[in-house]
Image (cartoon, helix red, strand yellow):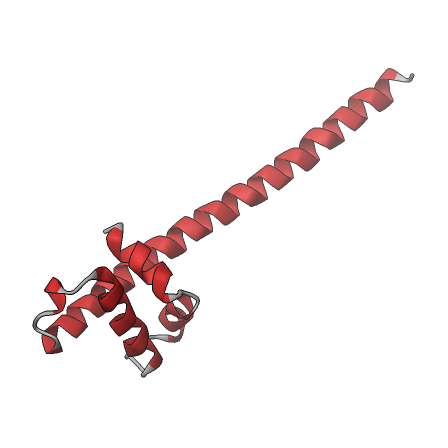
Length: 101
């Protein structure tokens, strides 16, 4: 076989694999950033809810997550980007993110 072809194929393979790896890495970083934003937003909503729900702190995480989900669905004051970040979360997702704080 022609050594130039082997070298070129190897180079193309490396570029293709590296390009995929870079794209996957960027996607992973974006997801991490979204997750951090979601955690901060959820903490803000917990603070807002705790002003009207005095005993919120003593509630199980599942109850708090449900109240937050309802608060978001009922029209919490959020920017469009914030709402988009939170609308894709289920009640269980909210529970997990709250427990990671």
